[in-house]
Length: 226
Image (cartoon, rainbow, N blue to C red; front, side, top):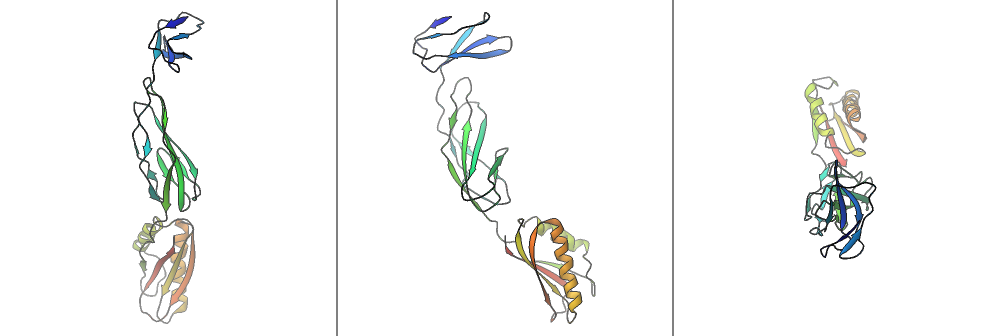
């Protein structure tokens, strides 16, 4: 079937109406006319003059390693689905899942956004956007308290260490310092108990220290590097 219409523009998509809805049947190659071959009689044939979408851009430009960055865009037109592509810049492990960007190291990720075509608009893709992914700040020092003469972690100490572990990146470097005045074995035991518990929660690098000049029944954890 040949359709002649001055409104037809080269690149327009021809749709046929079937029992399952609109189905693309061909594309016009010249202005004003198009020829489509059918294997069965359609109910109707429809031409669609697609319109270019508004310029699409990504407005998210920075995030932190260990925290998913929700990607925000501006521009685009119509009801087409939004998707993202990503490659590593200077960062490693850049990935986008459900519209959120993550990376495995500090550096940059290169992201593009695409808004799919719909019955009225062509698809559009943004320019590649460089997004900086920085290391999070080092958590504040955490102190776990012990009963006098004990190196057993209390429920409160464990809760404080769990909260700390959520802020630490895998591979972070920490110093665990055990205190026990004049009692080296107890100071070491306290530091070891804290280090062991933290390592069960997150993969970290630990330096153990002891302080024997203080009466404090505690162990401190200082983050040296994320």
